[in-house]
Amino acid sequence: MQNTKAVDIDLAKDLRRGLRHGEFSVVLQPKISLINHQVVGAEILSRWHHPHYGRVTPKVWVVMAESQGLMRELTEWLVRQALQCMFLQVPLSINVCPSVFDRDLVDFIAKEFHKESIAPSLLELEITESVKPRNIRDLADAVRYAQTHGFQVALDDFGAGFCTLSSLLELPVNVVKIDQSIVQKVTQDNSSALICHTLISLAQETGAKVVCEGVETEEQYHRILHMGADMVQGFLFGRPMPIDTVAFYLKGGSSNPRNLRECN
Ligand code: G
Ligand code: MN
Image 1 (tube, helix red, strand yellow):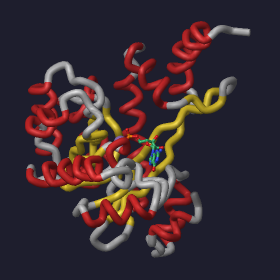
Image 2: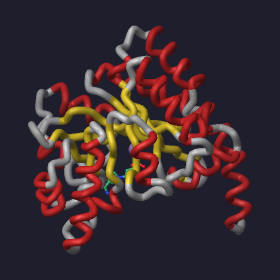
Image 3: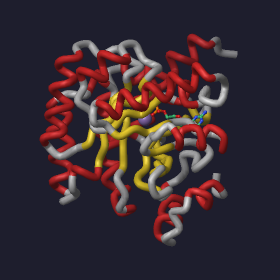
């Protein structure tokens, strides 16, 4: 039997092949407005199905992709997937690692969108704040550059990261996504609720819209609703699901999140 290290080395080698041989796919998780309770967009998440090991969690392969220098290629693949999902006619978001978020990548995405005549405003680029960026000024420059091309930019996993407040002040993002570790504690005690409420208000003060991630229970949902967040995402409203399932609900005009729950 192979030890964990040997499996890791195998996986790292397999990642490149997997990406180029169709082992990656995408699922979408709906984003729901707290104003009209409709689906107002979806986050695209990549999944890797290894032929031998089965589903490999993103936590494992994201680190490998970074160390193998594959993150840019993976992001380009994800951009093409996003373009293919645009027939859904809802704004979509993709996750972009700070290490590859630069002017060159933005130029690439802008060109791809231009080729397909798709409005850049339909794409949101989520940059995680859980990985410390090499240089926050360069990252802020890339954020502005993306916005001048018409893309939306979100600060992802807010509250779980290394530089929470400074990243909020220095990155002029359109959207802030509060990390699920903060959101899921809102029903736990008063101080946890206060932290979440304060982060929501703080983000809104900068002019950003706020998404609360990882909402799993009705109780969490009601708390968040009263805290004035703009949108929610989480298993309560829909797990990440195949594109056909999302299309089915959006096409049927039934974007009622209660219905989405039934296909979880
Ligand atoms: O870092 P980011 O927020 O992009 O990660 C999204 C991840 O969170 C996805 O892998 C998704 O499956 C997971 N996720 C989404 N909603 C929930 C939820 O309500 N609960 C939990 N535990 N995980 C969630
Ligand atoms: Mn995200």
